[in-house]
Structure formats: C-alpha cells, structure tokens
Image (cartoon, each protein chain N blue to C red):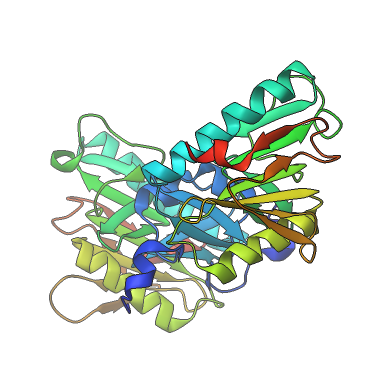
Length: 192
Length: 192
C-alpha cells in the first residue's frame, strides 16, 4: 500500500472487503470467498462434486448427531479464517466440535471461526495452487483436520497442522481421529 | 445479474461490482460510489460542506414544492447512470422532475435515471479531474443542469453541458433556467 496524503482526503478505490461486507453481497447462486480481503468468485460445483460433498456430509451429520459431538455444516457454509485483512472460505463439508459452537449459533450461513474439520472436494478444473492456498487458509485459521477429496483419482489426502499429508486410496478407510471421534467411512463409498 | 454463462471455470478475482451489490454493502459511515463497476470510498462531508448543501436544498425546496415541479433529494441519493459495468453516483443535492419520476413512493433502491439538476458542493479534498469526470457523467446520463458550489471561493459554476459553463460570483443571480422554471436566488445566499 502506498500512502499519499491525497489518498486520505479524496476518493479511494475500494479493493479490500470485510467478512461482514462479503455476507451482505447478494449471492445470486454464486460462490464468493474472501482471501486476504479480496473477493473471489469460485466456480460452481458440478453434479459429481456436489454428490461427493453430500455423501460425506450426510455420513458426518449422522455420526455427529448420533454421538452429540457438535455440528456438521452443509456445502457452502462459510468460515471466517482470518481478520484484517479478512479471509472467509466456504467448505464442501465441515464439522465443529460441541465446545466451540457459540450459543447464538450461525449467522447468515457463516461461522465466525475455523471449523475443526474441513472437507474439500477437488474438481479437475481447480488449480493445484488455489487448492494449496485454501488448505493453508484452513490451517492458519485453526482447522485441525482437512480431507481433500480428489474425485478423479478417487483418493483422499489428509492434512493436519503438523506433519506431512497422507494419501488414502480407494481401498482405505477414512478416520475422524480425535477430531471427529469414532467416525469412519470407506473411501470408495464416497464415489458410488 | 449473474447468469450461468458468466460463472467462471476457475476462481477469479472480483473487481467489478453491480449497483445491487453496492446497495447491500454496509457503508460504515463512508460514502460509496460505483464508477464503471469499481467501488470508491469517500470520507463523510465536512461541516461547511454539509451546511451549504443543506442551505441550497432549503432554498430550492420551497420553490420546487409550491410549484409542484418534482422532488429535491438529499443524503447522497444514488443514481444508476450506466449499466454493465455499473456506475452509481450521488450528488449532494438533486432535483428530479415529476416528468422523470412521477408522484408516488420511491423504491428503496438506487434510481435508474439521472437527475434533472445535480448540485455538488466542492471540497478542497475533491480533485479537479474527479469533479469534472463526475460532471461529464451526469450529462452523459441525461442530466440537464449541474451546479458546482465552491464554498472557499464563494462561487457557483453553472454547467448547461460539459462545454457550456459560466462561473457566478457572490453578487450574481443564480437561476433555474428551463430546468427549474422560475427559480432565482442570489449566489451569496448559499454562503450565509
């Protein structure tokens, strides 16, 4: 940012937005995210991507509800991952533990902090660089477990705050670890 | 309006905004305008500026009301001057005849037209090229008369088009011409 004295008095081009401003923008079916204050329009999920997100979301929802672990969030729920400049990301599926859910609940489909688990379903058109940046945003926001589902390769890559990512192939089974205690799901079942 | 054909295949930085998006943005005390899709923020008006805008509206208002000519709009009224990309501009005071906007309740939206008369109080912080750009935009959109009020010089520059203008000093008479028929006042009356 260059600061000149004139920029303080005259009009100023607005390039940075806050989480609150993002939520005020009418969505019109678009998917908007905020990355360090800048608004990005994301590609719409295709049917197969939505299918995977819905299946994993339903399995999470059942497990989380049945065991009173917290809340599972549907595709498109936004999470505030950073402030000043603000970063707001939407998950394909997510889980927040019981202890971290504020009493006043959800505001306009946006959760004020990072989820404990974030699920990303990657499409062929997603650029690897964008996916990596988003994983970094989740981790910096405090997400403890990230499942990146590659629908074409039929694999799931698991990211945690510490350690290298691990990749699960179709024959393996996905585990909620200590984040979603007791949750398991066969990787192949995501791709029926 | 976003249609499916405009949904990007990859994430794209959103740099252009629409009038509808601007409408829903919280202003946080700033004045927001849209120029060819880009949002500009302006500081709130200073005391002298707001005072003169108020005096101007209160001198013009009774004449317009008693002759049933139209409406005086104050409070940074937003006018949609162009679409795709959108331009939404707000003068300090606007006169809109009943020819352009018939009697009745106005929608809680920006008005999709240009005012007959746009009055701008020019602050020292306004840069001349920006002021003239705005004058040009009013005329391009169909405004018939623009008054630029200069508190520091105690003058009013009357534009009948971007090329046809005259500067009036304190002892001159300001008249509404064909746009505000019958209106006359002393330029000095605006600066009491």
